[in-house]
Every structure is written in structure tokens, then in C-alpha cells.
Length: 170
Image (cartoon, rainbow, N blue to C red):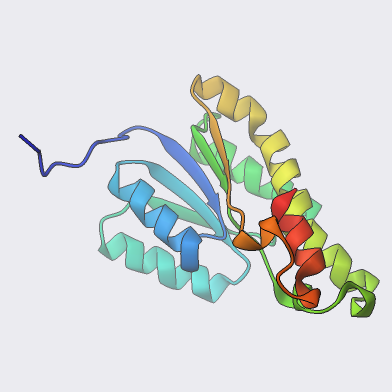
């Protein structure tokens, strides 16, 4: 006999980066439906506030912060907010935020600034946030880290995706 009831993760906590749209939004909403208290971040205040309002109307427990994950100081501020929000414990970190932007051009045409932005957002942020989250994940006694990748991680399907592909498959 099958049950229509969903399983529960009631009491768990999660940080989902880039949770205001796309895959990140779907992850935020699904985790919250399973009873997880979710904190997410977004670069754009208006976008974040609109989503927080929508999630509140859906009775989902979601909090949020403005954070550009490509920025070292903003990542540290984000983790301070997460520590405060979840009393020093974090069960799940989902490294979802990412950009394609300048990654859609051949490496030979990419500027140093574009390369740095792509690497800081898609690669460095995941490493740094995982490192910052480690003590909180350990304190929970059941910490999990999830990295959202891309099919482009298996190879650059066009000349213009070589650098982007490397950031998603590392």
C-alpha cells in the first residue's frame, strides 16, 4: 500500500545559494515543503524580496540575504547570517549559484575580468562557502554539501563554452 504523505525533514536547516530562480528556486521550495528551514541568497534585493513574499504566502519557512557569491567578504557575511539564523548548525549546503555570462565566448576572447568573475562565482565560491560552512555542518552531526553542476561539465559543446565548462566540472 502506498501513502500519499510526503516524507519529512522537519527540523533540518539548509543554505541554498542562488535560490531566487531556476534550479535554485525549485530546490528552496522542495526543501521547505519537506519541512526544512531554508536560507537562500540572491544578488538582487528586489528579486529576493519578491520571492520571500511569495514563499511566505505559500507558508514556506524561507529567509534570505543579499549576497554576490563571487565576493569573498559577502560570502563571509552570508555565513555569519546563516550561523545566527540557524544557531550555529547547518544540515545542508547547496552550492547552486552560478553564471554563464562571459562563459559563452571563446577563451581567447575572454578578458581577465570576465575569467575572474566566472571562476569566482562558479568555482571559488563553492570551495569557500563549503569551507566556511564546515563547522556548522559538523555541529549538526549530519551535514551534507551538494554541488549543482551542468551537462557542460562533461565537455565544451562549443568553442565558446570551454572556460564555463571547466568551472562546472571541477
